[in-house]
Amino acid sequence: MILADNCFITETDDLFCSWQNSLNTDDSVDITLDFFERDGEAYIRSSEYFTEYAYGISSIKEMLSEAGFDIIGIYDDMSFESAKENSERAVFVSRKR
Image (cartoon, rainbow, N blue to C red; front, side):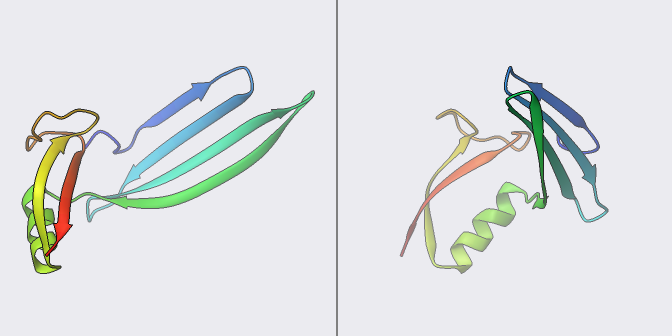
């Protein structure tokens, strides 16, 4: 899992972001974001903390079906290519029955 136990840093002229991830035993990932935004000569710090859950494509297909949705397409993140089992992210297009 690409997000597991990694740290990412993003920096621009007006913003510095530290993104830290921690993999849990249930395959969820705890994510902590720390932002430092320039405000004149100082920086203002803000933080976010959330958990993301990873599900396999077959699990999501089953959940959508049980919730009354038909799947129109499943795409690899940021493209119209078909998603694969090793895709980092899959985008589902569905319609309520």
